[in-house]
Length: 71
Image 1 (cartoon, rainbow, N blue to C red):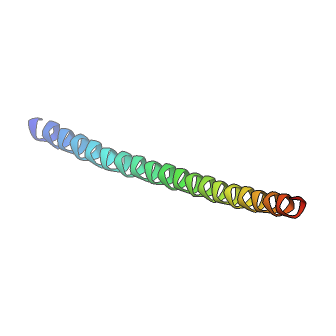
Image 2 (tube, rainbow, N blue to C red):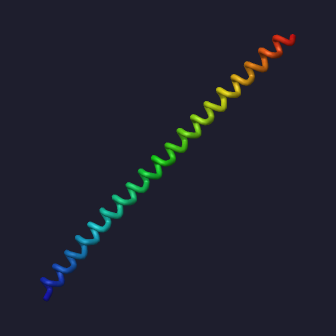
Image 3 (cartoon, rainbow, N blue to C red):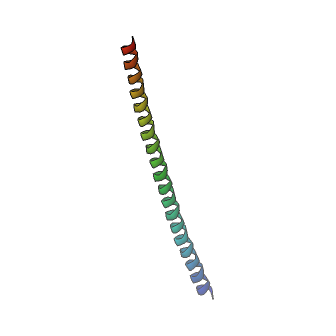
């Protein structure tokens, strides 16, 4: 009786260890996906910011040229 009880307990411990490993793997994959998503969002925002700065600089340059011509 004791031997079978020990075997069942050993099986349960092993099953819980496997479940824990699988859970940790899934959590790691979710964190990696979230990091990739946020990295992409950051890069997109930086590109948009650089484009806006470039457009503003070009706009200011054209205004200055017009003022030079009028002046």
